[in-house]
Image (cartoon, rainbow over all chains, first blue to last red; front, side, top):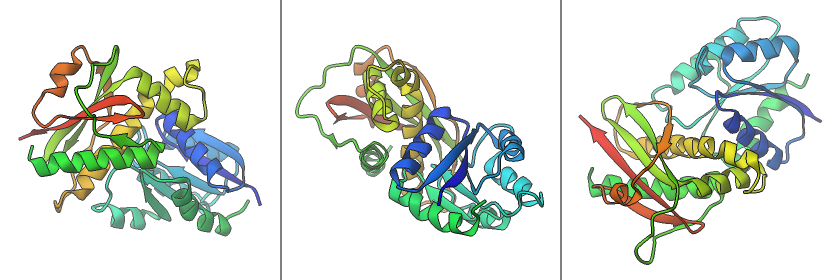
Amino acid sequence: MSHRILIVDDSATTRGLIKRALQLSGLEVAEFYEAGHGKEALEQLALHPVDLVLADLHMPVMNGVELTHAILSNPVTAHIPVAIISAEPCTNRLLELRRAGVKGYVRKPCTPEMLRNLVAPLLETTHV
Amino acid sequence: MSDTYTDLLLECLVEALQTFAFVAAEPPQGPVPAPAAADLYTLRFQGADSGELQLAAPRAFGCLMAANMLGLEPADAEAAERAQDVIKELCNIITGLWLSRRATVYVPEMGLPSASALPDWDRFAALPGSFTILAEGFPLAARIEETP
């Protein structure tokens, strides 16, 4: 079953790295969409149905937590799981992320296997 | 910076290279000649403890990393274009690992990495707390500058 994933990070190179790691992980992904920050991600979601949003925490314009709030407060997108991929140690913020509705979190550096372990269970819940 | 934190930085750098880029690192067996062209990458963190990660890397190493990680050839123009971004991402990972492994209750907030040309490699490599390793034959020098 192929999936559609939206990758949100302010670095185009990091988006490319995440995309490549997902490809190496063996997951079947039919379509990758990309956005440079939360607001762009919402614009992408208005155009394309996706099964999962993978977002960075720190981004200009709209960060990962604000993006999660926006996705979950819209009935059209509220079913889409959001997972955070960040280099920042989030031990102080795990509760905040959980309360915001974030469904998964993985710390960089993450291997393709780690990404698969994060993403596969979330994709099972929401295939478009 | 204490020797313990320097050792921890070395451990985080080696782990980040291995996990993030599948690049093995080793200590140099003698004096390391300065690379022809290198950049200094910095990433500030602020909180209960504040400071800055400083990482010096040859430009050619950035191209190799970008090529490895994005499935390109090192000579590709795109590898050169992405080289600095890849090393910035490496800085994010090293700093995140280093901060999380220090036994502090409140983890500082990380800023954004930046890059600039490094005019004098030898001077940077000789700064207090600085160490050099070899990654795929390329020298990398790193240190943490702690600020009050």
